[in-house]
Length: 256
Ligand code: ADP
Ligand code: MG
Image 1 (tube, rainbow, N blue to C red):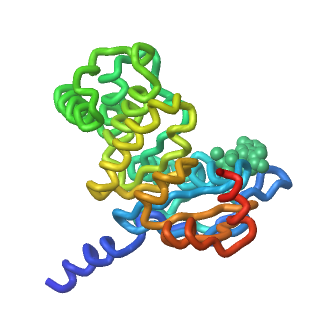
Image 2 (cartoon, rainbow, N blue to C red; image 1 turned 135 degrees about the vertical axis):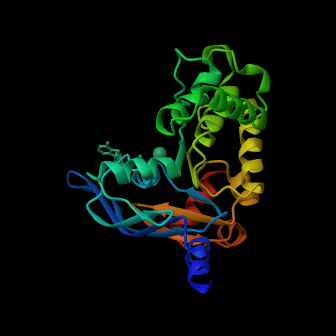
């Protein structure tokens, strides 16, 4: 009995995302200079920092969209190995990613956008995939949009479809890269509300955001990236209320 219980106990306490000494170069430009980051199950971690500090590259490495030169990366206990197609497929099933520009398929209805990946990758039957997609659309407040086309929706609605589409793969972590940056200000709130609800439901979230109010309210930890490194990291009250480095002080004061 003890032997059977051990793996479950180990997996529930091991981090969902485990980045160790990660280095990434584009040509001679070293963009990630040794990143160590663990995200625990159910944790919400927001990444802040100036443009060009490496935030998107870090998320893209975790999602397997970028190769890296040094260090190691595990998602849900699976080491990420480029060139190992099976490992990469497994990784993609563990990681959901949402981008700034929604990237919905314009030639598919909202419902089919949400159904596509589970149908292709998980080989779900059409009826089961549709029922699941309808539940997910309801969860993001778009129950009545199953038959709509992406271009009939507002940006905020499209981004909520993108969230439902990512959830359809039942990921163990969601990566969000500035998902409200392309939205008109009045549409930001509806998207953040959906993300906040996911966080409340226990979803593990790693998100790059400029929404400091949201980061302060919803995250368990905030990571400040500067020049390819994690420059400061801690609970939001500490990072926002008592920044330690001149770089973070300057970053925060430039926001006002
Ligand atoms: P952030 O998301 O914090 O704004 P990025 O991760 O996008 O930063 O970019 C970090 C650095 O990497 C920048 O100097 C950027 O120009 C460079 N970079 C990002 N993507 C590429 C790429 N595909 N090819 C070359 N350089 C890149
Ligand atoms: Mg970016």
